[in-house]
Amino acid sequence: MLDLLKDVRVVELTTIVLGPMAGQMLGDFGADVVKVEAPNGDLARYVDPRSQAGVSSMFANNNRNKKSIALDLKTAEGREILLKLIDGADVFLHNMRLQAVERLGLGPAELMARNPRLIYCSAIGFGSDGPYAARPAYDDVIQAASGIASLPTYTGNDPSYVPGVIADKIAALYAASAISAALVGRGRSGRGCEIEVPMFEVMTSFVMAEHMAAASFDEAAPAGYQRLLNRHRRPFPTSDGWIAVLPYTERHWRRTFEELGRGDVLAQPWFADATERSQHVGEMYEILGQEMPKRATDTWIATFERLDVPHSRVSGLDDLLGDPHLQAVGFFAPTDDLENRVRSVPQPVRFRAQPSVPDRRAPELGEDGPALLAELGFGPEAIRGLEARGVLGRMAGSDKEEA
Image (cartoon, rainbow, N blue to C red; front, side, top):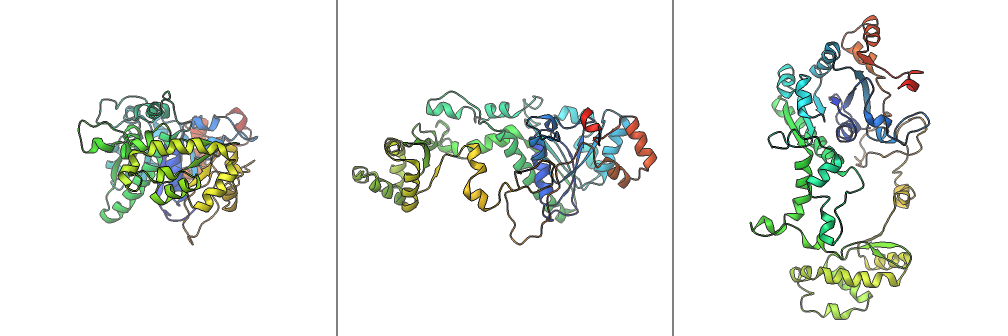
């Protein structure tokens, strides 16, 4: 954990991946992140697989460097405690549907009236100004809506989802970067601002940055970057596995076809012109696909290493755990002291020579509640009363089993 955002307090009312990942990034950079959970906790706490101590891998890898307080926001007392936390915060981050936020009285107008320096960030499914605004949204839905799921159809396959919560995670990156920019802006103006991070629009922007293509300049032109949509662009089978190879420049292609003994391709009149060569990229990919099965993966890797042509073996998930580069940089080494932790998914960005301290493990449900309430002026008796009335949730000792 770094100290770049030291003294910035983030109050986070989020669940699953989108909001928690954004909040974790801010926590990794040193923000004091307070995760506000329902009395039964973020649903991600209970997603398998879990450790022997009952900690979900999904929760542990998206909620480090945070504090946790569990509040029943359906009670007036719980809502008032949340408002007091937000009054002293720099950032409020949520990924609830806007209707639910307004019902709780936590909309931007109300909170920014109380705290004019507040940066208010809504990470939501669809932009609030459009006809889809009230729709529920999860990763699969956004992959379908934004065109991600349709991309395989351009190469002759059925629509399919990326087998990962890519929309949640990309939107989380946008949210964290927008909040960071807003903090810089507030440093100049002294005023907070409202941020909206809609997953649908984020992912449409992400997809169409290259696939707008000719449609950028011609209203009648179809969208789609043809090099990426060519059916021959794919990992290639070798004699014993799979490999990705991407000759990109003329030099790459020339060296590759010389190695393959395909002087006939080099002699084509279109080869030396970058624009014309791009129009024949499918043919060149097809030739690669015909040649790759003739040698083993390691042989090809040595060949492309010698030619200085971009390439990689196709790694499986378990392969990553033993990847020599990732081992050399200590990528999966535990960065916290979470019980039963043998590997972590770390913050991958490195700030050279920047002081850091070990990560704080993902918190138990409500473990920081009493300390946070004490900061707000609640005495021990008042805190015990809140716990007795179910306003303040907490997981401690034998309570873990019941949760």
